[in-house]
Amino acid sequence: MRRGIKLPTRAPSGAAEKMVPPKQVVLLLRQEVGRSCKPVVKVGDAVKAGQQIADGAESGAADLHASISGEVKAFTEVLLSDGTEEKAIVIEGDGGGGVQPATKISKPLSAEPAELLERIRQAGIICASREAKSLCAVIDEAMSPRGYLNPTGEAIAKPIRHIAVRFCDTDPLVCSLRAVAGQIGKNTTALKLGIDALLKITSAEEVHFALDKTQELAAVEKLADENDIAVHRFDACQYPSFSDPLIAAAVLGKEPEVAYKRIHESGVLVLDIDTVLETAAALKSGTPVTHKTIAAVSSTGIKAVTAPIGTSLEAIAEIAAQGLSPDKVILGGPMQGMAHFTLDFPMSKSTTALTLLRREDHTKAQNDPCICCGLCSEVCPTRLTPGMLSRLCEFKEFAQAEEAHLFSCIECGCCAYVCPAGRSMVQFMVQGKSERLAARRSD
Ligand code: SF4
Ligand code: SF4
Image (cartoon, rainbow, N blue to C red; front, top):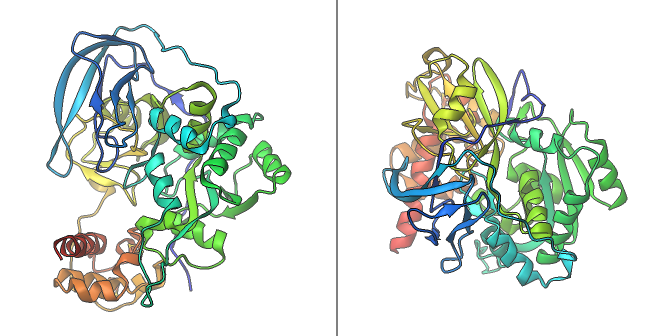
């Protein structure tokens, strides 16, 4: 059976363009799902890039740092896509390059795992994915899984045994991880340090690299060869081959049994290459996360851009749009991104891409009746019957949809992409999942 969809082109390789520091950044105090930081600066304070401006110790959130040097101008509220508001710190840049000095740590791996984990939290590392979580939270859940039980009460979820590093983005046309991987060059010291630290923290036994079949990373392959690291080659044109569940399936040699949002409880922890390098920087020199490489995608071109966290999407759109006037703004890539209502919004640590579409680039959902053509089942990478599942959710038969493995849907959008009836299948299934989760919470 064919899995996923075949794309005509893959995202370009190439170095990321470094953005000139903007005049102002807006840093959300909640960069990760469910946890916020508390400000440790006040209006009028001068800050340097890399200086801590909010502390997450109390809630277990990753700390937040200034991404440019300047002055704390205000505290503000930012309207999010879900209609809620979130507090943020506004920094006005001074145009200088003031950077908080790094502290060189001579033997970073001599610390105990708990101390290494705390340094990762202090460095503010977030795993950029649709449901942003801090690296600490992800590791914590992966080491002590609380996932589903099978009918005999035995835990299906397993503590982490494998770490898989992803070198290529899942979403088509998104080129940020490719750009970060390309920057490694011949020196793999940081990559090795990041991996060794993660092995020490998690007690995982094996490491795997997930590369596109066209990626030429000689030094990375040499490192893999010398350290008994398995290299898995996927085809980035066969979307969504770089998604967590498909990488975990390749590592395990079978499909993971846990729901896709808890795939880190399958025994395989899939981490992006930038997260591993951020881990190394945090442990080697206490360097926090201040910048992110994201993809700027539009019909006029695709570029990787490295920008300070908190940069306005408007500034990134100027690079992405190149003269195009967008009709639709997507936070993320074209398949898995979420539509957003404005460009007047700050880039966060979990932003992977900004996709801009003209009216002629996208089609409106028609939601015609399903004609039972079966195309959606043919492409579903998790072998579901999306036509039936989406109809169960549309008609509010949520419990029945759950029994039909609704939570195995990875929200890749392949079914909607091929559906001749133009049905909003992913939206129906996402709503179904939230209804079931809400019902469980109220039980
Ligand atoms: S049902 Fe879910 S996993 Fe299957 S193709 Fe549709 S969105 Fe992807
Ligand atoms: S592709 Fe669309 S029309 Fe065909 S079976 Fe699936 S939901 Fe129905």
